[in-house]
Length: 390
Ligand SMILES: Cc1cc2nc3c(=O)[nH]c(=O)nc-3n(C[C@H](O)[C@H](O)[C@H](O)COP(=O)(O)OP(=O)(O)OC[C@H]3O[C@@H](n4cnc5c(N)ncnc54)[C@H](O)[C@@H]3O)c2cc1C
Image (cartoon, rainbow, N blue to C red; front, side, top):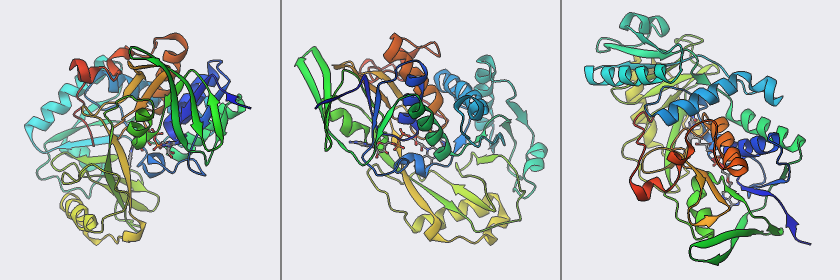
């Protein structure tokens, strides 16, 4: 017997789970999520740093963050499961006038779009957050107290558990092997998916395959400019020479940033020498590079112990303008993209699930002007260009 579903979601990471949650809560209950791994969270979601921030440069990202962070603040009550949202803030530190002016023009845009408490901070304020920071070259910064952290695994599980309580089905250990499309050029539409468990008949497919999204789009003969880029994180062993609680601190001179993770510190840095590809192994040479940046900005971190076996690597899903692609495929009717978060898929999971469900069910979204996020922008040249990428 052929299975049928109103909507098939390919991928059960935080984004696919959020789409399932938003669809089922909007009344669309015959939803099937198909995941090739035996457990959820084996893709980028399980590798994330869990940072959430509204301090972006484009209106679309700022609006998606405002919606999402408000959602995280009510997640436990609304979804019925914990998100572990910790509003510890994000603190951007500038060492030159150009960076300070950039932060200030972003802050003005964020305030105009409704972000309330984002504020300028002085060098002295910055020292108040982390007295151990080297600030001789810091000329100021910006802090937003509602930015902070969530637990990505809990958010993903919460979305999916809630969706399943409302009727969504989750098939684990089931790779989607093909997408069936009918019709001719100019009028092609989805009719089903093939998996090792058999065929599923559907007219709507959501591609939520994270860094593997281009391959899934290719199964339907559609182009999707999403490529994987390795991203590495290094945790220290327990370290008590920094405060117990402090914001995510971003050194804008290098892009080095860090936050507390339990008893230790989690160190992050976007290595400009990294090249695209499905590279999942942690590169031991990265440890020395990141520790150099860490000790330069926070001298006492030179004393921190690091066990390279506890460090890890994962994949960002990058687009050419560092902005998510959300919306219907122009080439194949019934195929929807929710991909290419370029490092922001955890923080934007509530908004992206909501927008995708809105588009499937109503053809438009009440959250923002969704066509700007469409994949068609790469053909028309109307790129969004996010520059505040960490
Ligand atoms: C080191 C690191 C740090 C990060 N830090 C942050 C952060 O601080 N804040 C933030 O917001 N974001 C962060 N991100 C980005 C964030 O993790 C991702 O944007 C987000 O997890 C994407 O979620 P997803 O559900 O789209 O993808 P994924 O979690 O990768 O899920 C995709 C799923 O699709 C499945 N799949 C793929 N192909 C198929 C198929 N053919 N059939 C069935 N299933 C398939 C995969 O198995 C996978 O489970 C970070 C990423 C990394 C790597």
